[in-house]
Image (cartoon, rainbow, N blue to C red; front, side, top):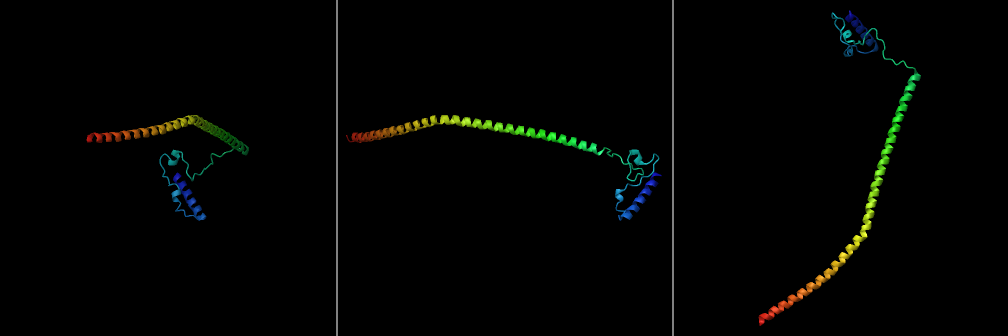
Length: 166
């Protein structure tokens, strides 16, 4: 009996499609397959499904709130979003301030280090200059020692030649 009713509904739907200018054969894949009758009734009834061609198709899930209620809900939702945005903006500004403070402290540390080095620099330069002067004096002394040694070698060579003659 349910299969007969469903077949009638399919025929009526096909006629409506023909009137609308659509080919009913090409839209068969959208329609449900005919259900054979069983002892327990329609298969769709067992699963609690509703067919697309059900005779009593009541619209469920309609929001029956008044427009004022909907507007109030929207206002509450927007207010909650604004509060979240304000919290996020506040957190971002706090993070930016922390970063600035860290950068300032590292910059101050660098400046202190550079200042300490600059205080030590004149002492280091003085030590370097005195070392260079000592090296130059030492170079002069070394040159004198080399000259003295060369003169002694000449004397020894001359003495060595003189002893060979005797």
